[in-house]
Amino acid sequence: MFLTSMRLLFFYVFFVWLKASLATNILGNGTDVIALLRFKESISNDPYGVLSSWNTSSHFCNWHGITCSIKHQRVQHLSLQLCQLHGTISPYIGNLSFLQTLDLASNSFYGEIPREIGRLFRLQRL
Image 1 (tube, rainbow, N blue to C red):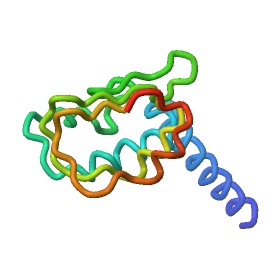
Image 2 (cartoon, helix red, strand yellow):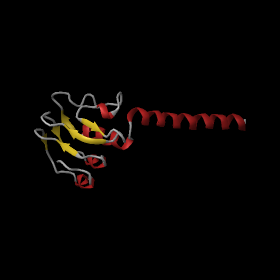
Image 3 (spheres, rainbow, N blue to C red):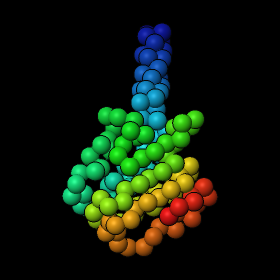
Image 4 (cartoon, one colour):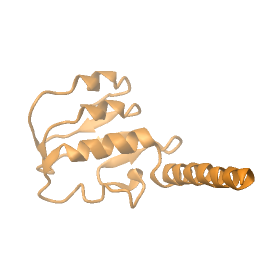
């Protein structure tokens, strides 16, 4: 009985590890994925559907408006200009620690600029 329980525990732990590992390999850096999906959630209107590619069926480096670093596969540029997006800017944007460019020109964002943007020490263009 003890041996059976240990085998079940082993397979459960292995399954959880495998699932997490596959998600990381498919989706990439978890911090960047969460930050981008939270940003998407803060958009109340996307009339052109430019964020429709922002889902877990593809790697976030392939999402519209995203450019990643080749070496680290981290978001370097977030460019969504002229998309007529409406909404707020999520404070999770501050978790994109490799971000160099944030271009949200010609959209309709309201509310305050999140103070978390101040954590983006690599940011060169806003």
